[in-house]
Length: 80
Image (tube, rainbow, N blue to C red; front, top):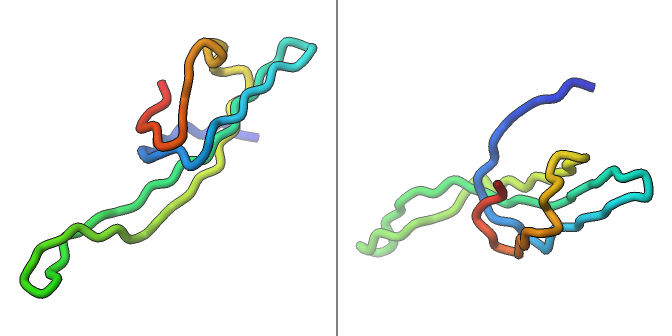
């Protein structure tokens, strides 16, 4: 399987799941939600509207060794 690098900017939809196996391997699982926004006219009042909602399920194997020391929460804006 090829490794493909890409960036998704959004919010976590739930608490991330982290597990360390007896072998020393680690996995971090989380889901990110993102959408496009546009201005719409609502009876003479400009408002922002979300559209094209997109959800991504992510698994990181052995990549984020510092994860237990960090705390990511639902609605977090970034993982670094």
